[in-house]
Each structure stands twice: as structure tokens, then as C-alpha cells.
Image 1 (cartoon, helix red, strand yellow):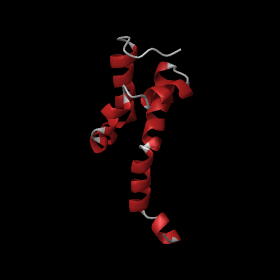
Image 2 (tube, rainbow, N blue to C red):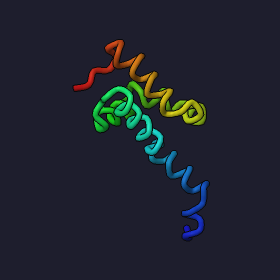
Image 3 (tube, rainbow, N blue to C red):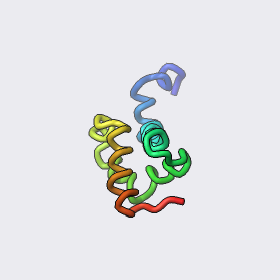
Length: 88
């Protein structure tokens, strides 16, 4: 693959997919940190967990459309507040 291909949008999108959409998940973790005072590393661990990640990944286009704020709120209200995900 030449340099031009590596800079292409298609390449970058495929790379994000292959890596499990780390940029989007980091944005969600950052929102959990900013809005709910959850340490970033703990928030990222939560977002990548087997309990939460599949809910985001099942329809990534919709998930990204809804945005990081939406997912941070969903995770906080439906996992942390309801005790379905405990973090220390």
C-alpha cells in the first residue's frame, strides 16, 4: 500500500473498523470523564467492556450519528446508575 492509499479516507475508516473504533470510544470515555467525573482510564475500560461495546458496535453508523454525548449518558444512566456496571 503506498502513502497516498494510507492517507485516503477509505483506508482510515477501514483501519478504525479493524481496531474496534478506538477514536469514537475514546470520545465517549472523554465525555464520561467530563460530564460524570469518571476517571478516563476507567471510562475507556467501561466503553470497551463486553457489556457495553457490542451495543455500540452493532450499528456503528447509527452509534456515531447519535454521538459521544448520547452514549455517555446512556452508559451512565443504564449501566452505572442501575448498578449493571460497577467501577472502582
